[in-house]
Amino acid sequence: MSGRSRLPPRQPDNFKGYRDGPTPLQPVMQRGPPPLPPHPAALEEELEIQRRDMESILAENRYILDENVMLERELTATKDKIIRFSQSISKLHADNEAEAREYIDRELKLETELHSAEPLRAEVGSLRNELQTLTALQNELSTQVQSLTKDLNKLHSENKKLSAMKAEVDEMHKELDGARRELEHEKKENKELMVQNKAMQNDFFSMVRELETLRTEQMAAERKARGIGVGPYGMLSGSLDVGYPGSLYSDPYNSGAWGPNGRRGPPRH
Image 1 (tube, rainbow, N blue to C red):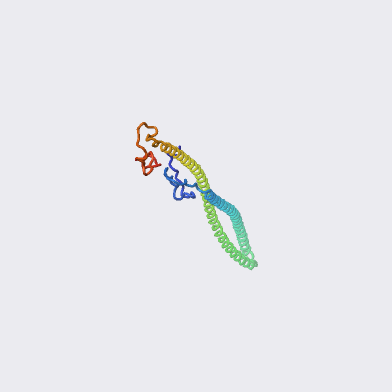
Image 2: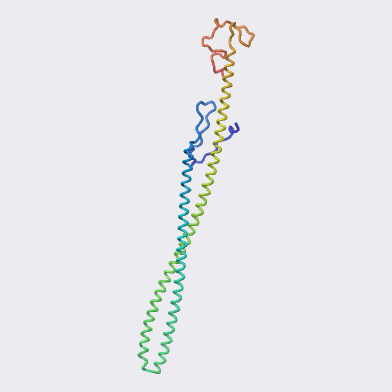
């Protein structure tokens, strides 16, 4: 009887079997069977859907983790390439500068020797041609260095993109954790709603049993009241008043002690 003053809990929209709200309680005097509780198959179907959703989320999480590991490996390999390119560029600069100094020193020395010896002019001309070739080679190497610098800048840009992608992956991890916590919270609320629904059903069945008991007592009282009728000698049972014989003033409608109301008892106003 403690559940009579309780309001029915508000069911969530996604609770299967209660999309239009809980079934209202039937009036106390309404005849017919009580409303049926939710079918276990519907609850099992809802649990199966939730299990499949959780498996899908776990699969997506594993895929994202694998992708993150692959990206980190690629990032490490890219950093190693950048370091090697930087070392190669530094070495090329040092080699070029050393060769340039060497050729310049040789040219100065040859010019000094040319001043002292004319036969060495032919050799000086050859060295100049060689110097021009080396200068062209230096220009070509400078072009290659510029190309490598562009590639290095491109790798830096890709590195920034990878960092942004890593931040997005971390954000997706946070969203997955939030979705998992929300799912656990909804499962807990569903369990509490099922317990409350069971308690309401028990209260309702208790009210029905009490109502049946009251009806039985009322019918017993009515049968007892109908037993107090007119006696064989015109005397009312349980009364000292003298009545008329039943043959003279008999009730043509067989209304009994309560008049035309019959078995329903006295009229209710």
